[in-house]
Image (spheres, rainbow, N blue to C red):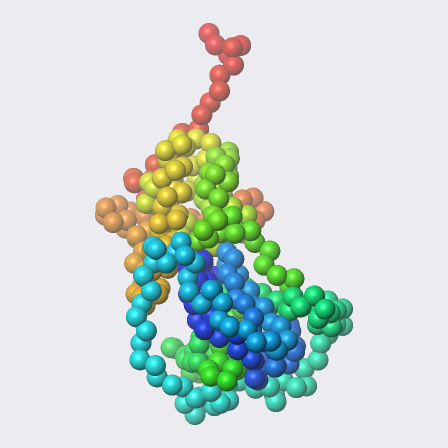
Length: 337
């Protein structure tokens, strides 16, 4: 699934639409009732870890928020690309001769299920708090956000058909639209991930992250724990472990404070660097992820690792460049000769 840097890029695509009214909706999502979003104003967009949150409210005169730009701490480290030619796209339900799937007329028949009526409608009716409605987007492996363009098929599917992907949700505004692909969408009360755990947040708590890494658990497990490293996924995990020269199954308790500090530095610098490449439209060149040889020319090992009873993630590492840290053995007084 998309990792933190990708979500930040999605946020950049959504930000220019903040403050605008949703004119019509589309998409094939049956988990929510998209019609509720018509004539609401997109009031805010936030990214926390691997989730994108959008806030909708009743029509108010809202200007563009500060979130139109990257957070200040990232503006210093990440150079925003120059704007490309302002090529205007049609904002009707047809784009380049292709009709946007699931226009508002096509989904008028969709109704809320009983469970959704109980959980969503009270928030919808309770406008006195003026907190609006929050939608959370959790993206799948090939999930994405498109601004005023649709995703096109790059290859034939299993049946040999060249069919363009169908978006889960399309939000049409007065100028342009947003299309969300391969994602799980659900109503929520707001962002639930603490900024202190987000690897790309100004409030990222290094001390908390270091304490988590010190546990007597393989560091590859801890890095994927979203409670401490929100936004960190399998690609970042593999790359930073190689950069820090740490074996994925090394226990954090067996690593020196210098090793852990180095690993944490690589987590932040690699994530910021990846975001920079995304904003510039440049591809990320992996050092170890999905490679047969490491940059030094050594044979790369591959296996699936994960906590017992939990999801196992494919891991690539170089046994030469990433030796496993030896476990510390405590010797009691009785065991001494």
